[in-house]
Each structure stands twice: as structure tokens, then as C-alpha cells.
Length: 64
Image 1 (cartoon, rainbow, N blue to C red):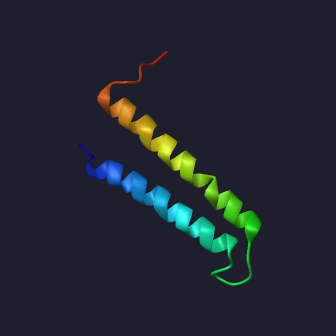
Image 2: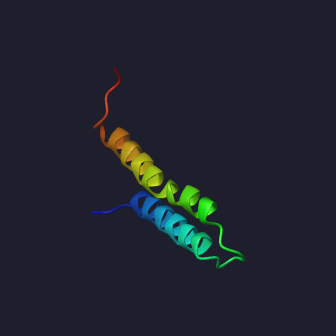
Image 3: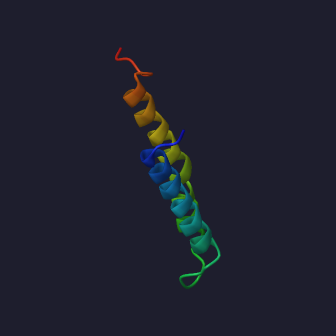
């Protein structure tokens, strides 16, 4: 079952994706393809960070 923290991580990744697409297609003015690519790289980073914190919370990651 998904917890609130899982929904927050997925929501942040989704917002990053939407922001990236809107930058790419120029929703906020002239298209900024480089900025869209940069923001698009946040999506897997946010999801990876969420997976890491979930693994730490459940004891799936050990030190060393």
C-alpha cells in the first residue's frame, strides 16, 4: 500500500515532468529546450531519492 510520502515523491516527479514539457514547448514564453532538458533530468533523480529514503526507512539499506 502506498503511503503519503510515496504520493509526495510521485507528485513531485510528475510536477517536474509537466514543468519540463512546458519549458520545452514554450508555454511560459519562448521555448527553452535546454532548460526543459535540465528540469526533465529531475524526474528520475526525484524517484531515485524517494526509493532510497523508502529503503532506509524499511531497513533495506545497510551501512558499509
